[in-house]
Length: 309
Image 1: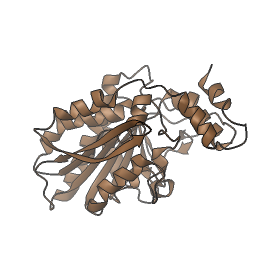
Image 2: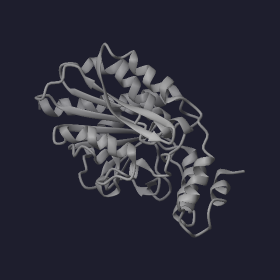
Image 3: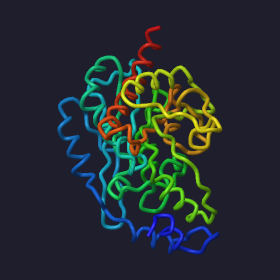
Image 4: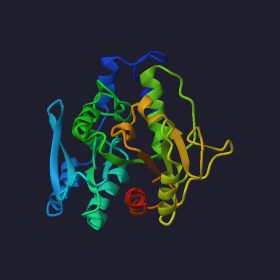
């Protein structure tokens, strides 16, 4: 059974899902990997370099998911502060492992120059079930608003709230996958009682800037770093990427705060959402993780260059 057909069999076509339909959807989800083994265990090996900061717990039925961030051990309030988030959509694997890779291999190079707060897996249930939504069929990356309907978004907002106004930059690590078109968009249409309108998936890396606070030089600095590792997505025949007009090579813009996107959570001047394409025949998982880490490094390098200018 195709994913699109499977979602269409839940509920009544043209009518949004209620609790019964959400329960049917949830019953079809299968745990496929371990947050504890893949993420929490990886954090243990970083304790010498970082201060590990528990910031809450997700409770879904009988399962509990501890939430952990990494904070610079030598935090100083006068330094620029950068937030790195991954796994807001748990199925976007390189967001999680790219954030961990940055923390493990690159962050030490910025010690004494910048405060870093890294949240490698915002949505552990989504990570384990390879799902875009959370346990309640809610998209965390449309839920960064008060009050938030998603536990994942609410917990991250609580973590960030005491530091809001101190962040120079926030880079949020995502992927655009073929399953966006074959599974998750059909599911969204079914959940909301709307017809599914087919689209296309860009072949390559691209970024999402903020319509309400565009920072083109910041985005291009990231593009320049990432294209050394993987290819930048070309536009389609309409000059678009994933249905939005490209404003520069590899860059589109969304109204981050209006849409409740994670990249709006800090109020930072410099924000970007990365979008890696792991299903490309021209990219490997290793390249995807490396591209995410390179994007983070480029963002920090840009912030430090601006601070010293």
